[in-house]
Image (cartoon, rainbow, N blue to C red; front, side, top):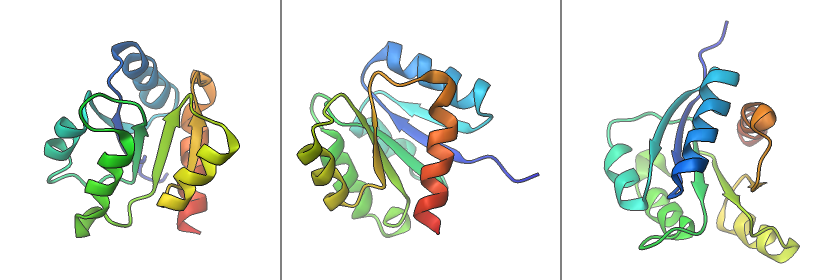
Length: 128
């Protein structure tokens, strides 16, 4: 059996974090650390070895894009696959997120029963 993925999930919405935690840990068996803000995530990531960053886009104070840039600037996390979770899924927005370096975008609202499989699939794609 392989080791479950370690996910750093960042979202300012308490309900989204709760549903995602159930979806990723309980349904998917993944190891999850959650943060409610970009600043909190930048503190929590130190000492972690995440396999994937799962980032909300629209957050107060530090957007998902800004957090992504800050994580990419840290050499130890520069190559960690990143997936954005957002309701902003117009084709040009998705292209923009991918041009930043994101693996893909998961649309909100997401299917809790399929979330962990989608995250695993995207991480495997990024590492291929």
